[in-house]
Image (cartoon, chains in turn orange, blue):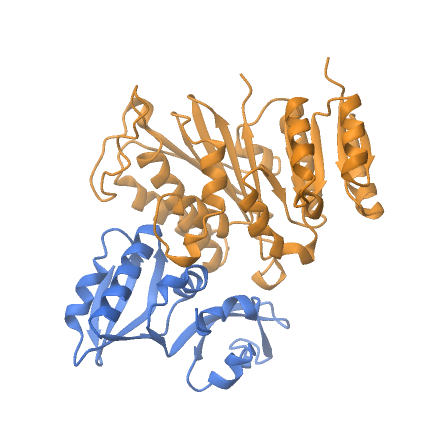
Amino acid sequence: MREHSILIVHPDRKTQRLVQRILGVTGYRVDIADELEQAIQLMEQQAPLLVVVDGTIALSPEADAFFTLASTKGTEACMTLLAPDAGDHVPRILGLGAVTNLLVHQMPVLAEELTITAHKLIHRDLFGVEKYLLWGTELHTHTLTRASQRAHIVQQLAEAVRARGQSARVASMAMLVADELISNAVHNAPVDDAGAHYRKDVPRDVEIELDGKHAVTLRWGCDARYLAIEVGDQFGTLDRETILRSLAKNDVRESGAGAGMGISLSYRSSDHLVFNLAPGKRTEIIALIDVRYPPAERTPVSSYNVFVERT
Amino acid sequence: MQIQPANGQLELSGSIDETSGLLDLLGRAQSNFLALDLAGITFINSLGVRDWIRMQAAATKSGIQIELRRAAEVIIHQLNMIIATRGTARVTSFFAPYACDACGREDSLLVDAVTHAAELAKLQPPAMVCPECGSQMAFNDFPERYFSFLSPG
């Protein structure tokens, strides 16, 4: 039977205490290691549900053995934390292709990101933008039944965001994220029985009926902390490797072309991007845009989580 | 996207997306020069970005000099994120985010990149006065990030 524990691997005592305090509310035992050797010893005695690792440690050559052991032990997720001055490490972390949960924000945002992630894993309940918004936040739902509705719905979203007092910058980020995620769900998600993505090369301005399983859902809401945008499809074809490759995509800066650009642009246009995957059943992507802070006070890099539903 | 010719330039407004046909704009260059006023652009998606890069590449290949005037913040974000979108175009003015500490107003203000070239090269945002209360406004982004499009790729 699984030990009800969480393991923190971080060299800084203050951060250890902070993360321990945040994750202690789950009721799980929280173990702490200063470095990887100690963490591996702890890991050999038990199987923590969740592991939280310092970004610098995650980049060390010895981390491979640790992540492999965590995977063998059935750890649901390894979260990586980055210090505020370590934003330059993000491309390297993305380049590893193994970090499924990167949290870059400081308190109080870190506490929100950590607890929601932990609760999703503990309760095995991954889906739904509600988990990221305050109680009572009104959610607006649009179901696309034709591809041509994308432009109208995206425009409607921007106008509604502006009408609720948000800045043009926030509205423009929301437009970009919603447009790219809907476009991906309409054109890249559908596969036939042989696994071929049959709508991938259909020009984006060609009308397509989105009947039955092809329908795409957009939900959004704002709780004065976040503008949250959720886009879902019913194919569940997006996988962890494609996501990590897209997030790391260097050619977004260099050429701007190629598949996966939509995910990469969405990541760079939001503060936190969450992927909820139920393979073969559904994919849900949630983008959070922090509306509390002006650009100059926001962390220049973004957090992300990739959750995969266990069958 | 709407296109309006005015004062020797093309004023573009609305969304740059898969329907924009930016390459066609090159046919409207005069004496190998094309000035685009981008103040009215509200949105550009990944397919618009791809089209934009193709337009820039074609302009460079055929020796057409593109000048970007009053580039909206959404354009600047793309120029900063995707180096290839810069091409060989020259940006003469652009909008930038400012905030007023005194009254809380946030605004997108026009910066003359030619007049302020020396300051911008040192990543120093030009001083701006709040149009509402007259106080000094503060630049509302990270200068090293927002002005990166001005440095060579």
